[in-house]
Amino acid sequence: MGEKVQKCGVKRQNGFLYYIDKAGDVSKAKMARGGKKGGKPEKVMKVGVKKEAGFLYYLDKAGDVAKAKMVNAKGAKKKKK
Image (cartoon, rainbow, N blue to C red; front, top):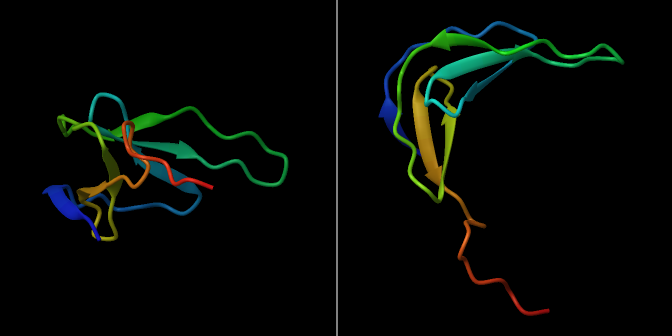
């Protein structure tokens, strides 16, 4: 589905959400569960990925940064009803 951008090899812990932040680095935040609030995000690894418009950046199963083309990117034509 996606294309690898950067190899990182991040090991995941249960109960945390991993994502690529605005700076292009890998961050994690504690997930909210059963009325408990989530935690503050913390950087896991500095990667510095330059993001392109129209792509979704995520951490794949191997713990590497990958990107996939967004279906509803800005400027995309909407279907008529």
